[in-house]
Structure formats: structure tokens, C-alpha cells
Length: 369
Image 1: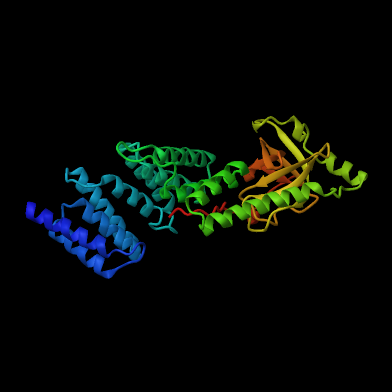
Image 2 (image 1 turned 90 degrees about the vertical axis):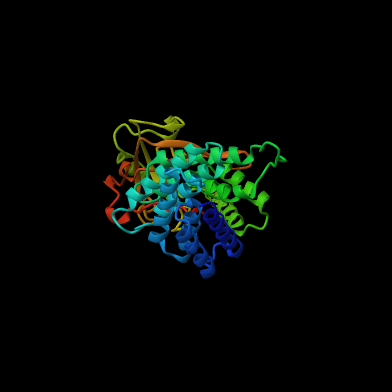
């Protein structure tokens, strides 16, 4: 048995030497297939084979390998169970991706990432993939704000543990493993209109990898959005005539409030009425940003999620229930009121719900697999 284990480890080492990053290498698969046949109780060989089959595009086979690796660890065989759980978590998000079972697989993905975290709460990689799993569920068509909050908490734990000094090692303020974390978290912050935090994360990413095109592109997009907001606010608004304005105000729901009556954060049992002045984001942007004016003609932004760009025309009356207010920094020490509309069912346009044809699943580009 000892000789077999040594042979299995040797095959693993040979396969690792031939591996080429994310590229599938047939010779690597041949070595790993030989390893699991020679030593079927070697968990790390099953995990490595799963990674190889993933690169080949054979998702069900990769999933089976990771599950076998985990089972071998459960049976008492020595192996990196954390790595197998993390790999299974990623794979589950891609398994039967377009089937009705996809939501259940994503929830299981979260559970597997949690298991990996519980095995070692100081492992930054497990925290990172837990954050990715929560993000995947949020953007899978059943968005819940709690998933975004949990993703950010997991990313924070990943960052804290990645920068923590290892006993006996030279402390380092940053790590290349944080690159994707900062890019992804920055994009989530941008999604949530937390522009200052998004800016900080993109800049962190660029300090780690100054030539990272993805971080540079996201940073430029963020600055473009801020510039668009600044330009829209600096222009003299083309308000409706006094008669038209009065007519619009009269259509506001009874008891609706002006923006200055809202408190920071959630405002339960409150309704905000406002008039759309113009759209200030591209048709594909998430969220869609509208420059609006409340009953006092005070400007504010409305960030609309889960709806298409053409859902709300200029001049429309918006009725937002339970508005979520935040101040959005726009540079030079200035900020503007912004109401985030995360639940489309709480938004009415000209007295009517948003039509089904104008509803959309939120999409947020990240580097997570």
C-alpha cells in the first residue's frame, strides 16, 4: 500500500509539472486517470482529475471527481478536503446551469463553500469562494439583498485572512490572490452605488497588478458614470410648465414624501413621489440611473434594478414604496441623494406596476467562475 501511495504521489507530481494553467492538457489527464486507477483512495488525485476534466469542459465528470475526493476524505484517507469542497462549490454553479435544478445547485454550492470555511476559518480562498457563491445566487434570477451582504462579509474575511501575517513568513501588505477579490467586490459596490468603496477596491487591484486591463476598464466605467451624473446635475433642468408640473404633482399617491423627508437607509411604510427628468446611464448599465425631481423640484437619483432601460420615459411619475436612501459621492466633496429601487414590485410608473415585459434579471460582470 505504501508503494502504491508513493506511486500515486509521483503521478500527481508528474501531472502538475505538465499542467498549463487553465488549458486542458491530454497528457495530464492520462497521468491522473492512471493515478486514480492505481490508488483509488488518494483524494488529491481525484481533485486534480476533477480540475483537469473541468478544463476539458466535462462538468458532470468533474463534479463526480470532486465528490469522490470528498468522500475519500470522509472515509479517513489523507487529502485536501478544503480544496475539493471549494472546487465542488464552483462546479455546482455550472452544473445543469440552464435547468430548473440550477437554483438548488447554487444553494448547494453555498453549503459546500461554508463547509470549506468551517474546516479552516483562516483560509482566505474558502472565504473568497463563499463570497462568489453568494453572488452567483443573487444574480441567478432570485435576487435577495441578504446574499449581497453575505458576499461582502465573506470577501471581507477573505481580505483579512489573506493579509494576515503567516508565522515564520515575511508579512506582505498585499497578495496577488486578492486581485480578483478587489475587482469583484468593487463591482458589487458599484452595483450598490457605493462609488467611493468601489473606487478604493479598483485602485487596490491596480496596486497589485498595475497593468490589469479589467480593473482599469472598470475604473474608467465608474469614473464615466460619476462624470455623467455631475454633467446632468450641472445642467439647468428643463422642468415642465407650471401647469404641467401641478398636474404631475396631483397624480402623486396620497401621503407621498419629498426626498428631504427620507432618512438614510430603509424607509418602511413611506412612499416617495418624483418625476423623471432624464436617463443618465447607458441602455446596458446596471442599475439604470434616472435623474428625477421630487415635489419640491429637488434633484435626486433613482437607481432601478431588475428592469429594462426603456421601462420609464422622461416625464413619467414614479411612485416608490419603502424607498432606500443613500448619499452617493460624486467627487469634489459633493454628494447627491439616491434612492435605490431593488424590488421592482415596489415601483409604479404613472400609477401602474412595471409591465412584465420590462422586467429583467440583474446582471453584474465579475471575475468569479
